[in-house]
Image (tube, one colour):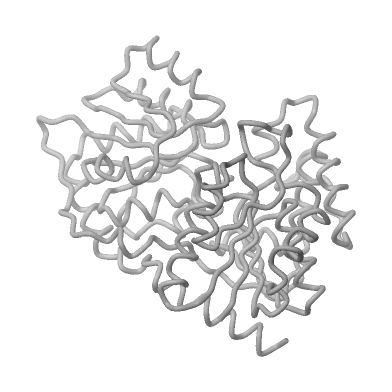
Length: 410
């Protein structure tokens, strides 16, 4: 099968989308399928571009100055369409276009698929409404949300309008981003979501296309033999964080909870983001046993993860899946979270969930865990019991079934 991936989130960033796309691509290729991956990226040498192209990863025209050094942003969809058709005219003969985002490169993928009557599968990965609110200053949010929504509507029809409400669109900016997400999803022949709770939210706001849940998976090569974790009463609890250090991920409230809970612990924080400096100041101020490593590849932190007693994901009403949870599951590490939606993702019996998202509630849950260290071993065993369920090879078999279904309908 020939499959074209279009995503605005892959090169020069780290996160759940990039990890999920990479695992899908590699597993499909191992099964003998041809994958072309189109994505924006920062400037590279000719040699670096050739190395990527050997892996069928193609860097589409990318803005030189917009968000320079932060995230690569694709140029206008029509520019990308012309570029793809000129360099890869064979795209017209592909079996599937799988779209993994909602930006310029992804829009171009939808338009090219429609031009050549290629079935479109769209994975809706994340909550762009919360992302905008977290990254854009307060006074600019409505302007940016409206501008992005308008830009999107120039290229793909917007038949659904999401209005402000008291659910997930309490501001004009967030309503505009929900409009963008919903209208983008409605261009697909099949919409995939990584979780049932996110699917329900998209349906609530107006997605009308056929939908299915396809949870993210962990690459099979990560499944090395690991031992059940246990915590002795005389050793510190080793806590790990490997998410963005940004406001939507909520490291700061967890650090506050850790300072309230006290106890014998050490914590390693792997990740970068707009709150890294703030986190460093707080750790220094309260003399916490926390080391902030900054941006680190998963390959480099995997050893530290396998040594840990507890993995942490304290976002609330944001994550649609939470790759942290299943990466910890494969390593046999219990997880801590406060968002009840994440109970759908975490292995039964393998997690601690606080009764609230505030620092006081999280501190109470941490104190209870410290008082009962034997729970670590029980939760670790539960994680290892279920870990084969998250193998990427299993998830890809589901994905291939969805591909075949949309091809037959076409």
